Length: 393
Image (cartoon, rainbow, N blue to C red):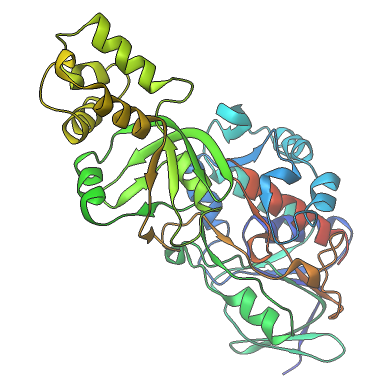
């Protein structure tokens, strides 16, 4: 069987892979994209509630976690959020900014996938879906074995993502191939993921499932002020997802449920100014009613504020401004938006994403040990790292 010949083969038709393919195609390279799912861009399609939070106006190196926090700087500086916005504008895709610099399509995430495919098609990039790689060997170049096909290339790009959301087709393929070629990996774990709890804490959270509020969430030296959400398994919402990337198993998280408010002072003022009101009524001025009732029942007597002693109020205030909780775990890769960790950045060139000791092998996107905050940052890393590799292959 005579092998097919391509200048570049990209394994993975997600955000990073399509960006790399179109960029290489624009440089006149003969490019093939291999995607094992039945269609490309599946994570793009589900992101942002189907509207794709495609980047963030504030994308900067400080918003990315890695064992080497400097690694992402080159790619992010050379292909910025403004470069991607220009591409989106050129395709006439309407977008809007939500809170904290997050940019979303006005219409559907399908527009972003269509844009990437149009760019690939314009440059003659071939995209094959529902195609599984059985084996990769390396001599002068790379030989890729498919079912009944063999493909040769001088440049192989691993863009098949991490371990998050396996129901969308995520596998450890990129990590496995990287190991095959001797590349080291950092520890991997679910990130941007809800927390789970047990015992009394879980019983309370289940009773509050669906309630949300603004908070400052802290873990592992990081803190974020956004919404938190009670679920039937524990806690979720943007603030919780954000700190999950900095949390390690067994550690506490701390939630300030009244940001910018001195809870102790506010409770004592309520006791003095409206002594006949019930605690749940007072608390409902700050929290969803179910949460106000749960906090009052848990910390205070079922009596008017005038009959609450100051010590009990101080204890409640301490919880409101700093609720210490110890999650039992997370909801794992099934609900994690991204994978933290991956192919060690010391193995790669920060300018080209090429493996230092394996010429012609490139790794981009989520497979690399670079993980962004929630809010479009991980897509920007996909665009930037994909562009960097596409300019080098």
